[in-house]
Amino acid sequence: MSDLNPVNPVAMTVFIAFFALVTVIGFFAARWKRGDLTQLHEWGLGGRQFGTVISWFLVGGDFYTAYTVIAVPALVYSVGAYGFFALPYTIIVYPFVFAVMPKLWKVAHAKHHITAADYVHGEYGGKWFPAAIALTGIVATMPYIALQLVGMQVVIKGLGVSGELPLIVAFVILALYTYASGLRAPAMIAFVKDIMIYIVVIAAVWLIPVKLGGYGHVFALADAHFQAKGGATGILLKPNQYTAFASLALGSALAAFMYPHTMTAVLSSASAKTVRKNAIFLPAYTVLLGLIALLGYMAIAAGVNVKSASDVVPTLFGTLFPSWFVGFAAAAIAISALVPAAIMSIGAANLFTRNLWRPLVSPNISPAAEAANAKIVSLVVKFGALLFIVFLPTQYAIDLQLLGGVWILQIFPAIVFTLYTRRLNTPGLFLGWLVGIVLGTGLAISQGLKPVYGLHFGHESCPLYIGLIALVANIVVSFAVSAVSPRRAAVTA
Image 1 (cartoon, rainbow, N blue to C red):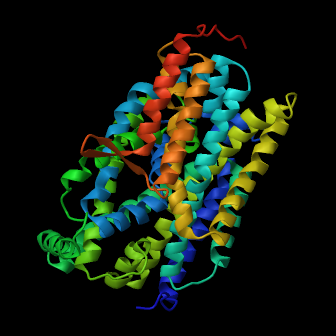
Image 2: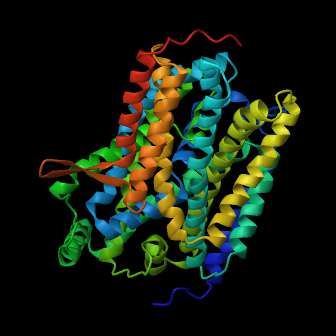
Image 3: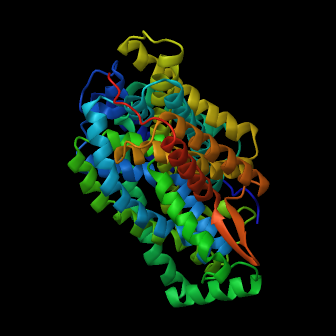
């Protein structure tokens, strides 16, 4: 099989048509729910006015990305049941969102916080610890944006187009309408993106098994494939995978809404009640994710053979569907890259402007200059991620993204525990954060940037997610140091 298929004019035409549609929507978004886009809360949080329906699409579009559609089936295709850890993770996360995020929203709304680091500054004062929180968010987000490009790259290649030019053109367009419209652009585009993805996935899980002889036949062929392959693969988990599976699910759930993009989506909601309603209805996306994961087994049953597992979904669609649907599916996945990439760049720009540039460089910056600065930074972040993909090996970007979860988990105590206790103080949280970052990064490097580390208890080995190990160390240090140092005093604005 050739790495590159010939260009299909029908598929390419459909792809370009839908891409043009979301481009128009992106630029039109500046006129929707009008606000003064020279103010950061309007540009970067959409004026905090998104109701339940808009927030549902925005958070869903933000949380379930192009790389989810590409990577989850690819992992299931490669290793089987272990790749389904994303399912319990997205089940665990919503009770957490329901319990914690409305409380955070209320504080942020009352005190006009735009970022998580704003919240930390409001609770503890100072500028260096909030700067550390902001830097953690930015660094953890950069490879995440790069991976949206990986997803887009895969579908463009599936359409038979080689080279980086189409990717560059797509991201120039994204950069321009994000600059012009701020968070309103991905919020509007998320409507189109989510509807398209639902159509693609429902059509795929309905029609592909019919073509392959039914789900029973699909699972039988996948089981036979993994038994022949051997090793740590199979349609059932191996006993030595239980702790790794569970800890990856738990750690990923705790990390999910610490990222700048998910935090931005939550803080843009109109009320705490909106956040709670979304926590109730967002599990509909978990059903979608489970169906997407099954595409990995369907690819095995269809005899798909690819050099890179990331090519599984485009190759499966190209094999079994007509050209027009291939173009539609490619557009849906590509748009699924644009929405989160836009929100991620906005979230990172908000952090840089509010919690690095303003306190450390320009304390007297005006609100209009602050918003203008954030717009420029959002461009820099996007093109930094683009350069990351163009000049560095893709595999390196994927491995580095695994560290993103390890790093972002280390801000969990400062954000979540602070909502419920005043026992923690800046020295404790700062040292806990530092220990977590150093330990997590060191363990990940020792494992070749793999996300799991085996803890040994006598003769038994217990593989656990590195982010969770580092978080436990962070929590212990945070509480121990805080216990022997003065309690924090209330911070006055």
